[in-house]
Length: 261
Image 1 (cartoon, rainbow, N blue to C red):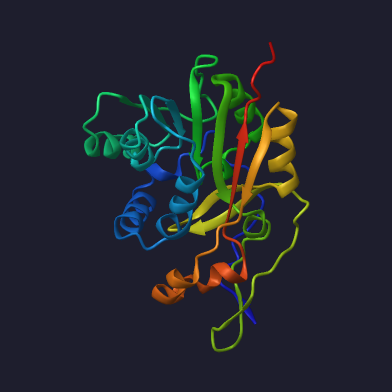
Image 2: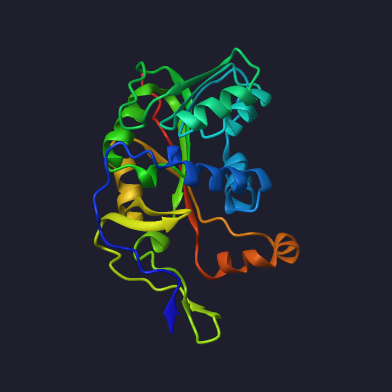
């Protein structure tokens, strides 16, 4: 039996990490998103959008905005203003080229160093970005501070089952996928993985850490999701059958409590 790759040493990454400006990584990722062949389009985007509050008249913060897809969607749903941040200069350049909307502000900067005004936003969203961040608690605190009372924080990350021991599927001699190995689950920290290029650092955290950090920072947990494609999607995309065998992502929704008078 073999696994799909073996590069999984625990190696700290530079902070902030900016793998998306690696030319090979960026081109591979852009091709994936343009063809919509990944899990973003099939699972994560529909799941996130289904959990959004009413955006009409709201101010939105997008942490790790990528090509600006969510920022433009938020505006299409009536958001008054969107501030979208990404550490990748390539991503910000592409997002600006795709956007013709003065109510969307793109900022080239890292999530770790993001300093937003207090109580400035009604919604903060982060799509598959926080597993690249070393100090999750610090980010949660900043998001809490920049949300208005009653504001919502929605984010997705790679599922802890996937990040714990990222050696890939164990396969038989014919290459058939047997199972996804789970190991070192309680050993949180950096994992070096291969995705388009070698040496991509992702940070493994347990489900407990993701949830309890939100609560410790003052949030109220509203929803936890592990998206799975419906039967109709599986019929059209049999390649997504893997997502039924192991959860690829985790989505959490939390709110900042309304201040009591």
